[in-house]
Length: 329
Image (cartoon, rainbow, N blue to C red; front, side):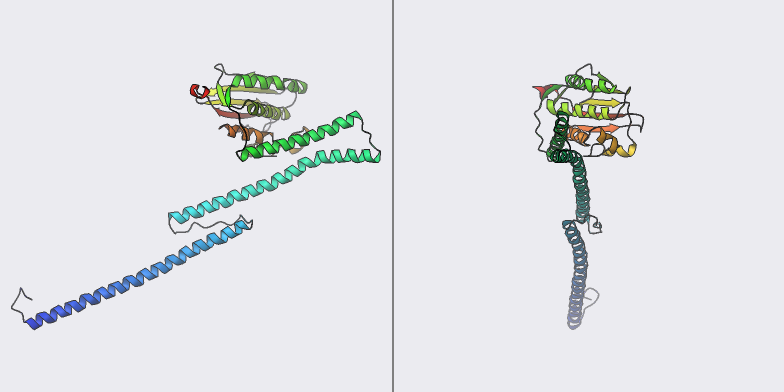
């Protein structure tokens, strides 16, 4: 108005006043709209967050009560809450697996203890009734049953200590070939009595590992015992060592009964048996391979099993870190 003509001061003042009222009104409306929008968004977000937290709280209460089946939906509340829900679901699934393992462990442990206890109780009752006499053969049999219970208790204690990272390991440089030869010599008589051929194939460079001699000897003994229980006369078992880069590999390969594919992932679980009746007849407790895995993991290694199925034998492989020269000094 000023640039186009010589305006009337009153007109200019009126225009300025109208413009001031207009921008003040626009600003007030914009602020009101922004406040309403922020309140609305806050309410929606608060409700969605509260709903997610309530879902987590309800799921946590169910888990605390022993129900691990419910899952918390991931939702659409951002990466943090999705990660929280995923972590909670993983925790619940792990707790469910642990609870199932605990129940099965107690059931299997009770079953393992029931047989020798029933035998001992039966003979003791017979002695009290005068039906059975305390002959040397009876005393030897009772001693064997109590020894079986002692071994079972020791095995369960060892596995529990390893899984709780309480297993004592006295590390020292060890010749793998010497471990193999010692294990082969110790098991030779048992294999000969069953008519099973046992042979050892050692690595030419005699690799060295850093570990506990007694614990690793127990690993080989358990693997050979397992192979003997799953073979028959004229079968063969081979104990071998080899070096694969920075890893030392020990294998026990047999030509025995073999293992179906669905059993392979569970072989190292406590009390798991492919053929429970046959293994129990041969005196196995179902915990020997669990001890193998626990000891190997305590040494920073890995235990695996492979088989092409029933009738094709099985191979148990132990992988341990190679001891470099600086580790041996």
